[in-house]
Length: 122
Image (cartoon, rainbow, N blue to C red; front, side, top):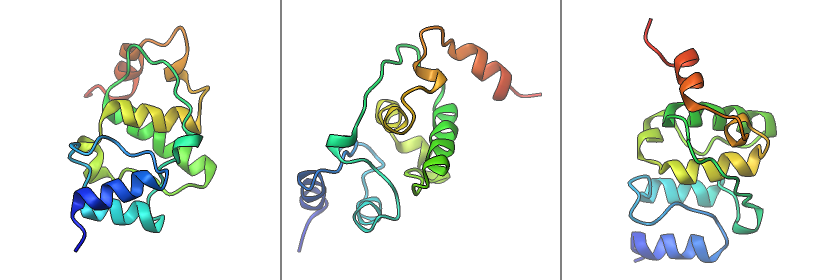
């Protein structure tokens, strides 16, 4: 019987770019969804990392990632219920792979402006 750690190692050895093993998003269900293609995660050779020294909140990153996945026709890697469990750095790596020119990676990006415009309570 394969353990979660064995399954994680097998997926990483097959080239998939996953968050660290200790991330709470790493569950057997998530690993199965990666393996079957129900969720999209890039292969290591596809990852394009861009600098984002002042990232926006996780909700803004998730929304941008969903939009980028829809534009590229990829299955969204994070479901709403899993959003809080994914590491911000990993989410930004996914976003920069799909959309390296996204405003979050721009030199003049200021996260407060995004959060005030889109996520503040009425």
